[in-house]
Length: 190
Image 1 (cartoon, rainbow, N blue to C red):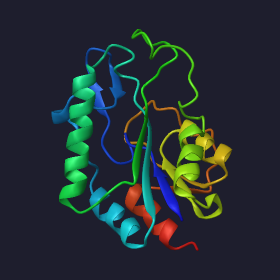
Image 2 (image 1 turned 180 degrees about the vertical axis):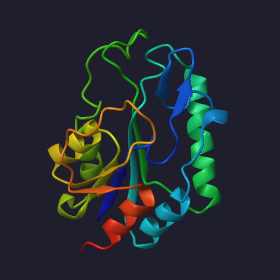
Image 3 (image 1 turned 135 degrees about the horizontal axis):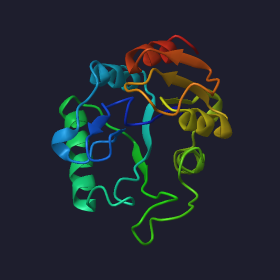
């Protein structure tokens, strides 16, 4: 089985600028969640080519006290509804909710699953019998690329959708303008 691991914020959906923190962040509320142009078509192409789709995303906003768990769950539900409306289905969603500087008990401090750790990739391989030699990871940050490289999958780094993100130091297998371009690269390489 062959899979594509995808980061969420910045790759699939737009990051949001919040004035209270003066930072670009993951959407904190369902109404803030907006897909990038062409994402559903690109994911449909991967699915049609029989790639298993996996989401691997660091989501520390609740741990940092910036959003409630209800808002997190409702934002995820909006994401899933948008996918399913187009017939796109992820095999599994892996979210790391921890943060080293979190304030929520149980979600603060170090963990095994926060990227760049390849924890979730290894878990997916174990559960779904993936052949990592043919798998890919698509992300926008250096931590995404480091995660994929630590697992031994091919990596594609998409251009950032906002200034100031942590990118530019890694050396991915390929670079892409956006997810549609990344999918074209994946489908063009056996």
